[in-house]
Image (tube, rainbow, N blue to C red):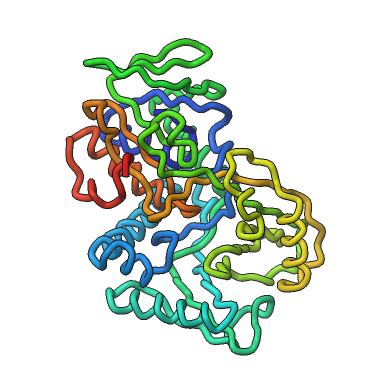
Length: 368
């Protein structure tokens, strides 16, 4: 396994469940990348709204992706309980907030498409919205199965459980390109020595193409976020997506507010692998806290996370062409990796152990 984020530890978990103990290499620390630098949302579904995925991918694939993520979300909740991290998840529901009439039309279409296929969701009118986001004419879609999570606590709890089960996790051990694929094994070079493995899984999301050039469709993108000191509790009883998910905000149980967004303001500069916060974007986040949400608590933390985006926008998942199925890749979750990575990890583990998965074609191949 290469990569100590949710994708890497989830694949190692799924393999351990099937009796295979892997070695996991992480360039820095477990959950030190995008898995620990996101907004902490636990969301089923793909990045676009459901009616849009139906248009982009066809109704059947959109339905299968949505169902797989619902199942993956429930499985992740169960796993959190098993590894002693139940407190890292909060199933509160999520509001997908429409900021204007155009977005309201999309939210209604999203809801109609979900209802058509029997998926949960209900429209919340302006009078029923939390005070912080209530405005005349606004509405939102409530998805009751969604919620929030502490991503670092969850991923590291899974990692600790893996170590108890015999999985070796080597932090500060980056894999060095290229991977040397031989007839009956793969050699992974690191600054600390070589690892010889029967199979290799590269789970790097935005950095997938660094070790798998065929995954060049995945581009790294910088997302900015910040967190405040404790504010008035009860301000936001559940996480909120706004402006098609460009802005995302939640309030933690202790009152702190976590806000991310305005990647469009970052423009072309957002397409970078450098996890350095953008001052203009951070300034805009500050104004959003004060002017939109009425939060006066000071900002205490600022950060940027690098995530993988594809134009389709389908994650990549499966064997790497030309490696005789000795190298597999997963990544490119378009900013929604907490659940989709768990699903992709399950698919890869099935392919590795049995050679087949009913969802093998669910996401795009790594060379698409």
